[in-house]
Image (cartoon, rainbow, N blue to C red; front, side, top):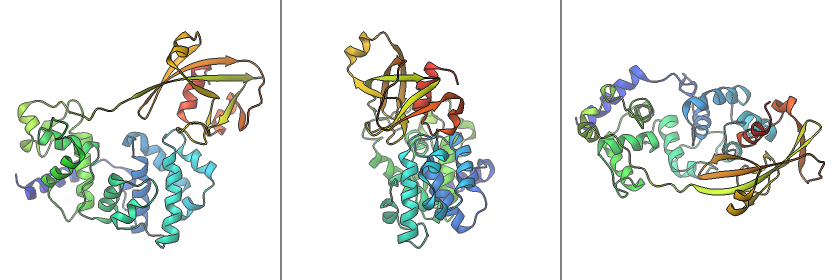
Length: 329
C-alpha cells in the first residue's frame, strides 16, 4: 500500500470503529479547543478509561476557560483528586489565565506558542494542533510508537529513539482530515496494536507490518530507571482522627496532604519492625515503614482529619493508600 491507501484504510477503520469519548462530541469551535486542552492534559501519563469520569466531572464543574482561570485552588484540586500528577491541574489553571490575558481567550494555533504554555510539551502541542485545529501533525504517543516499532520491526536503541521514530512517521502520509487522522492512528494503537496480544486480523495496515509477517510482536522499550527510595511515615491517631501535614518538603505531591514522613536509608528500613508497604510513583519505587503513634503532637501546617468525613478532604491516592494500610474506611 502507498501512503494514500494507508491513509484511506486507517480513516475508514476509524469511521467504523472509533470509541465514543466525551471530548469527541459535536462541539463548537471554542468548546473543541477547551475540551481538547483539558483532555490532553488529563491523558498525560493516564489511560483513557481512567480519564473519562474525571473529564466529565471536570467539564460539568469547570465548563470553560474563564471558569478555569477563576476557580478556587481547593475546588480545582477536588476535581482532580485521585487522578494524580497534580502539577497538571495547577498548570492547566495557569495556562487558562495566560490564554485569556495574552491570546484573547483563544487557544493558540501555533506550535511554539503552545509549547510556551505551562505543562504543554512536544506531544501535547502536536496533539492539540492536530485535534483542535486540524493541522497536519501526527502526535507521537506510546500508541503511535508501538505501531511504528512493529510496522518497521524496530529493535535497537538507535531505532527506537524519539528522533528516529519521528522520521518514521512519514509512513502515515497526510490527510485533509488531520484531526480525525491523528486520533485514528492513536486509536489503532490503543485498541488493535496493543502491547500484548495485538488484534492483527482487525488491523487495517497489517499487510505493511514486518512484525506481523515475522509473528514477533515483542516491543523494545527504552530502559527506564526506577529509583528505589526508603521512607518512614508517622501515623498519629488522636481520638479517631489522623494527623496530616501540607507537603512542602518533598518534590512529589507538592502542597498536598500527606502523613508526616522522612526519607531513611536502606539499613534503617530493613532493621525496622514496623508494618511496611510499597507504593510506585512515576519512576520511583517507594518502600515505606509505617510508624504508629498514639500521642498528641504539634506540627506546623498540620491538620486532623476524621476518617468518617474522609470524602470532604482533598487527599492524593498516595495518602489514601497509606491510610488504607492502617485502617479500613
